[in-house]
Image (cartoon, rainbow, N blue to C red; front, side, top):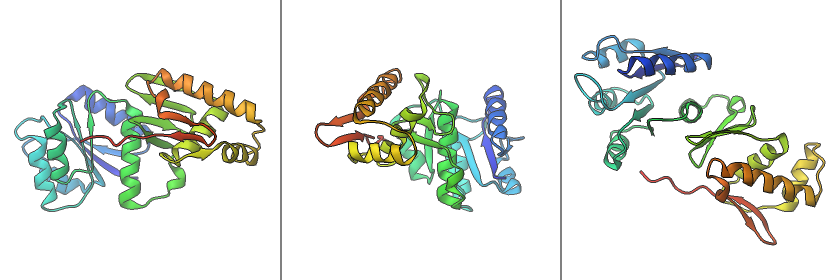
Amino acid sequence: MFKLFLIEDDSTLFHEIKERLTSWSYDVYGVNDFSQVFQEFTAIKPDLVIIDIQLPKFDGFHWCRMIRTHSNVPILFLSSRDHPSDMVMSMQLGADDFIQKPFHFDVLIAKIQAILRRVYNYNTEQIELKTWCGAAVDYQKNTISNEMGTIELTKNEMFILRQLIEQKNKIVSRDALIKSLWDDERFVSDNTLTVNVNRLRKKLEELQLGRFIETKVGQGYIAVEEEQPL
């Protein structure tokens, strides 16, 4: 079980995040004394630190500096502040990622899993969440979520989206998609592939993501993911 140190002074938000993370089998610790954050970090020895910027006594940047002088533990910032300089400062201090409040919990989970997978190289076959264009894609539940809401996909739609996301920014031919669907015993024709892609794109429009699935005439489809600015 991974130990997470959640440095958040909003009691309501802390307990909400802790409850959700605990349901994912993470061991979550909070701060008892905001003037002793580093000492508590040292005692807990967490596998990942989640830290807000605006805190009592000293801000999150201060504690990030302190932690980085002694540890390379991954650090994820949460903040309601949206100024680009805050994001840049976080990365310059050695943070691994930055999420702006309010956020969708599935996005937080996906980012935590991605960081832990990268740092600790744990079994990626257990990971069923993927981030794409700022949204959380849950392969197991066949859902995709962002700040606009959550949509459910059919198994075929999710299968197609997964093939495209796993090869994002690359053209996936129609033949390759049809072959993958057949190999997975999902029997589709060229016409039903078109129908499924159109339905997928229409559903993604509800999350303002439809434009990120592009049709390349005579070639296939591509899931575009733009670089996210700091």
